[in-house]
Image (cartoon, rainbow, N blue to C red; front, top):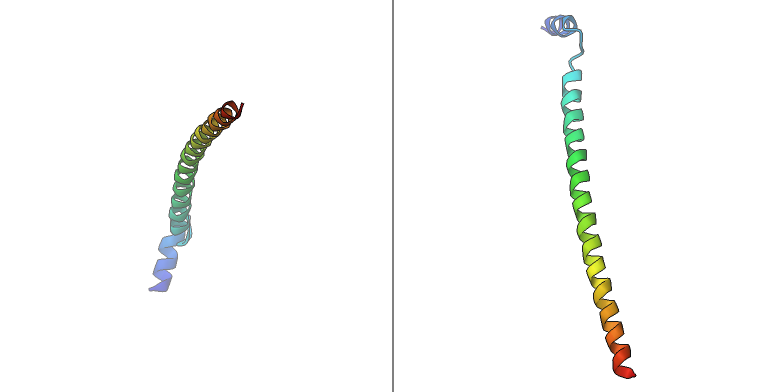
Length: 69
């Protein structure tokens, strides 16, 4: 039985562990691409919120200075 498996696998020109390794490699690549895309979206959203908060802080600071004068 094991010899039949050995012969059939080696007659294909590959080892039995290459197919699972290939599947895991493809899954890892897909996860990397999805994570990179999601991270880019989070970075853009963070930059937008930061800009809005800085503008609001500047308006508040300008309003406080005008009220004290």
